[in-house]
Amino acid sequence: MDHETKWLLGIVGGILVAASVAGFLLARRARSESARATVANLNARIRSWWVMAAIFSATILLGPVFTTVLFALLSFLAMREFITLTKTDRADHEVLFWAFFVILPLHYLLVGIGWYGMFTIFIPVYAFVFIPFRRVLTGETRNFLANTSRIQWALLICVYAVSHMPMILRLPLRGYEEENAKLLFFFVLTVQLSDVLQYVWGKTCGKHPVAPSVSPHKTWEGTVGGIASAVLVSALLWWATPFNPWQAAAMALLVCLAGFFGGLVLSAIKRDLGAKDWGGSIAGHGGFLDRIDSLCFAAPLFFHITGFCFGTGMDPSPPGWLLEWIGR
Image 1 (cartoon, helix red, strand yellow):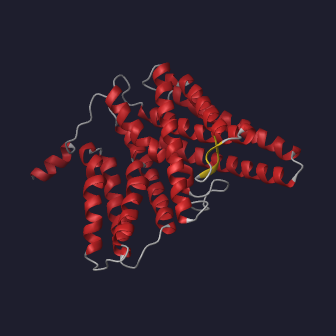
Image 2: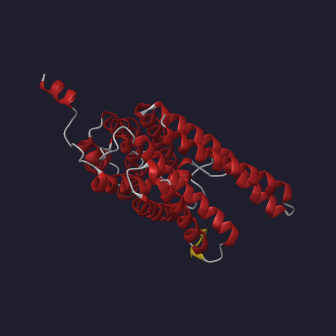
Image 3: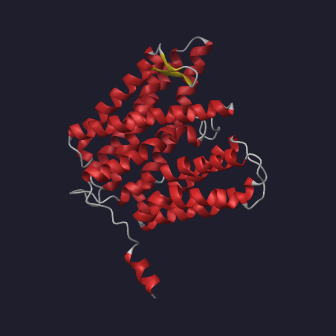
């Protein structure tokens, strides 16, 4: 743990302490029933943030293997929520077994061994083709297109997109060797801080909804204020990244915008399914997918643009030891 990592952890801890103190003071001053309910929800969110931040920070410090396992578990739980809310038929159960217990672990195995070439195409190409092949063998044609598409979407969003976060640890970056854990920390902090600040700005001065039929609580004031604040904070954290201050601000703006629209997309899916939240596993937040919806769409963009602009080139070939084993 170098000084920059300690500073990042200290900044997150300081934010959580300040939020906890603010929540305590607001709870003492709340008088109306609606105010008390709002503050109670806020404090539930803060308590959950303490737990999530502790788990994420500890996993990052333990190394790439633990980080990959954490995100594999997160993908499993998120995909479980996605499938639970969507309508599936009996014929889908065998396909879902392959999705959960074969495709998901194989994909994260590719992340673990760092096989970039297969990682980029395994789900978008091979799993995408396999799912309808396996479904058609059941002989059931009712809801074939709808149910097959739901499983493909679940894999793309909950597994493929999410797995780009631990894959950040494998990015070869110029002059940034062995420091990628801080880059992953920077990415997650930027996107999640944008979500939190959009919530705060929206609650304090939000008046004009962005998409009232999709997410009525997202306002222009909250969106602009939250993203601008997050970009400013991220630009000030450039020293923990391979970027200069202007590059850090540009990358932060990119992922915050992607995260915002990603949240809207998943909100639209929830509205289509007639649900308010993806689940109730995280107090004050909803389900796991409610918490990582913005990360899902921002992670692939951040990974590939960072690799293209600042990387030395990912090797698409299998790891050397695997080639030797195949040769034998």
